[in-house]
Amino acid sequence: MNTRYSISFPPEKIKKPIISELIRNFSLEINILNADVSSGKTGKLVVEIFGKEQNLLNGLSFLNEEGIFYRQIQKELIVNINDCIACGSCTGVCFSGALKMSETFNVLELNSSLCVLCGICIKACPLQLISLNSNGKIV
Ligand code: SF4
Ligand code: SF4
Image 1 (cartoon, rainbow, N blue to C red):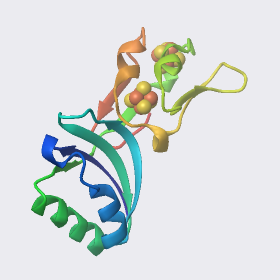
Image 2: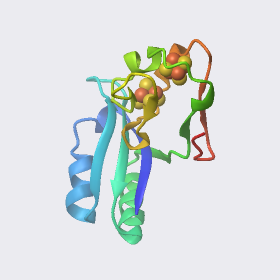
Image 3: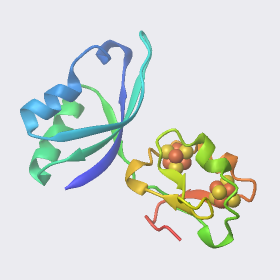
């Protein structure tokens, strides 16, 4: 099972090794897609969690017990490739490498597994071809 979550840490929990406890105690694999953590403030992670369903449920219960807020990410990035003019504006701002131009520089390619759903590329597209939706559909 592979699921994406946004996890928010209150300031007093930022230094606790929550992620390593999830890995060690619940046999979960965790891929951190995005991290926004600054000392003394709330921390936010976007993670991809791999593991057995029961292990995942146990791990989420652990987060609840620790007072750490999480939510499952249902949204996916949609790019209207048909109307794309391959200008490259979106690839220039995509720090994760999810959006790239093809080797011939005439086709935009999206690798959804690298997308951290930051939304930066949405504003970068002059034709407004990029959006987020909750249907998990890429057109
Ligand atoms: S939302 Fe856009 S800019 Fe952000 S990681 Fe995904 S493709 Fe890249
Ligand atoms: S910014 Fe818009 S038009 Fe330009 S390559 Fe990206 S999706 Fe295509």
